[in-house]
Image (cartoon, rainbow over all chains, first blue to last red; front, side, top):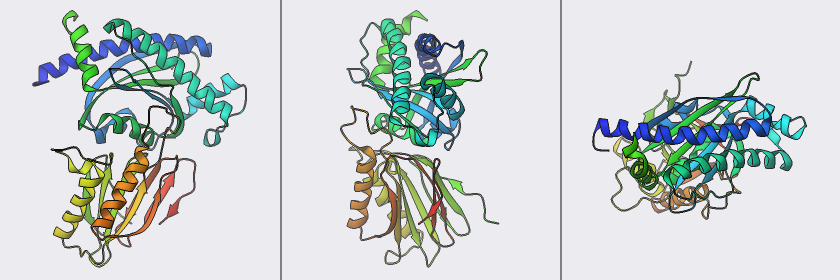
Length: 203
Length: 159
């Protein structure tokens, strides 16, 4: 990534990569929620650590975040984020209960984790085929809190050596219902290199 | 009317003087170390992401060990007195306690590392709101050194 055109090339390839993952994940989520979903354009950016939350929304926005870390050779943080209103709609639909996001019970928290698990696994199934490498996620965990707080651990896990991160996100939204969220991938250097090696020449 | 607080983001260090205000929004496992000198009304924050800096680190502000040292050094250079400096710590939560890959609790490690350095530098910690599993936003008033903390869905408190 020595110059500007190399950087834009990397972002373009990563974007294509994430787009396929997000497409697959949105299909799985749509069928699980019995709701029609569409993906918006995948956006990819190289950002200083301090800017990531602002790029996605605002630091204090309340969101439901489900996060896991790939634990094989290739490392990446991967998250599904739902704004609070959508998280509420979704949990109500799945658990058939009234939901208080400030105080989720263990069933609701488990449902949130499971929804994240479905999305993340389907995302990874699609992208691992593209680079012909197994991507193994740890079981995810979920929380409802401020976006900045939700991002702090994924960024910490990534940032031991780097000060800027490549963040790729894909918004999805309900066609008929008011529902939205996004997938966010934060790949480590080796993961980026692998993606470039396997996909870089096909653009 | 107080001025709008200036935002101190991840891996940033800011020093300011009253009547300015500083803030850190959405602290999760990150920890904000706030130093205040009540005589000169000079205050500074470093927003730390990780406990320990690697060898040849270029960004001292990102790590507890190097970041706290830099904050103290810069505060003294700007005219604060070591004897009157007070530290307050906010953050260091464990946001995803059930994530199995986390052998370490980064939030707690950040907290412990920051405290260790402050102790080494003989800076008194006057208050803290740390650890737990919830994120925090903190606003620092440089007129009196008070820190107002807000949690998602929670009441405000001042330390």
